[in-house]
Length: 549
Image 1 (cartoon, rainbow, N blue to C red):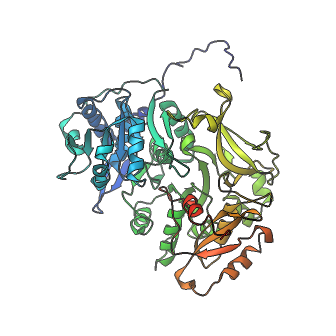
Image 2: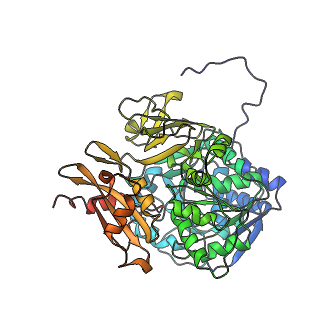
Image 3: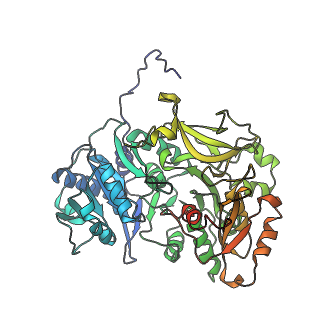
């Protein structure tokens, strides 16, 4: 595609987009708005946007005093707290790049990311000291900032976060950087090999934030559930900042202990949040067990990461929660598609169909071009809701390469503005333009020349009242090439009462006989990746000989 230059405008087109402008704008005009952060001891810390901005500038001065220069990379290991929020602005304020470090990765994998990205300073919560101490000899980092007080450590050249803020003043004028300068970096979770690095520009973050903020207002209270070390925390907190919403940071939480998340939702009157199906499934189970069940009359949630089971959507809606779904990736900053109910759809769909529609990945956002193509011919597939193709994406906030990684060659096609990223996700597009992912290319089962969607099988399995979790993989088969093998965790009250045959019969209501799993394995736990998705790679390796023994 040729870029044609026309008659020059009279606009300030050289005025650069910087992420720090988001907090400076909000601190100036909505400075009294509240930010709430749950501390490690369970206490709730409260301050305002203007106070946060003051601390951000103080820490920017601290970074300068430590010799941090434009272009330096700074690694961060922290929970979802107000301090991590501050780092999202103070690090770019000095022209450095914040590298989002995932503490759920194996320490040696984390060391690879630290070295590959060129991190020279790590800022970490005290909880993560054992991880960094265990790899200290494997990384090139020699300076550290700990977000706590009075902690003993084997690390050398250690500073304290709060002391640095107190020692510096807020007299700091944030420079304007070229908007193509990197401000953040995230790495893929490495489910198919070593993680791949993406460096986000100020421009990509600001543009994506503008799109995300369309669904937020100053009257909202946004709770940051998505780990802030994962794909920019999906930028929900950034969109909320832009419009001046109240912010709630829940600190550390686990899927097994979501009580304080529900408490925050109720006490802080949370109206918007986002996360993966697993966390909302835990929240739903907690809500179901409460004696006095709350009603959330104005709460909206966005589910991403993977398609939510219909039972989860219906369950959340029974508490008054409005449910939507989005699709994005590390490579797309993250936004690609989101839930939109078109007027024509509302006219012709039943309530049941509208509910089911919420499980589709939705309509592409402005700012990204999306096409679904035949993996062999490269031609776009018809919008018939049946023909499967691979999703390709390009746009304002889509990466054009991986950082210093030869796998870039196999992951992209085309050059310049004609460059498309190959997502590896297989999808269909219906006649109304709604995209539905049916599987990953690496996970779809090719049996006897026909494709079987593992996503559809496992999501329908999880609608069975006895099933707590379920996943499906393709396992080599001597006759058919591959056959489905399902793994199921039963709810405690159904253990020993529901058989494999019961579940296969249930699946038979929706799927053809040849699509049904050849076997179902009851398990106590299903392995998950560092971001909570089912780790099918582990299962495929363990059960690769299941049908050939």
